[in-house]
Length: 105
Image (cartoon, rainbow, N blue to C red; front, side, top):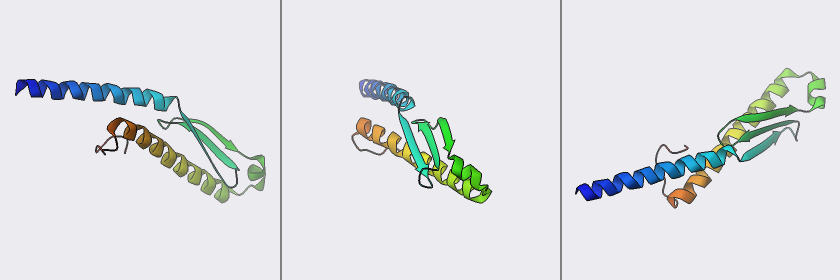
């Protein structure tokens, strides 16, 4: 029985190492979204670090705070969704499609 337990711990260590590798890969991948026909663009990496937020001059010149706020909220929600999707795709490669609760969800 100790041998089986040792094997399980070894597999767990290997899985943890592979998850760490995936997180490093995600940190190097970028995702970009836009809203308002490209008036607001956000770029992030695969671990939710925002690199840039670009707002079109035309939108700024409109001086409509509510529209600007709505477009930023929409872009932030979309970038969050896309990053989560990217992380899930990478984890699916590792787990062979088995969903493990708590991993990148």
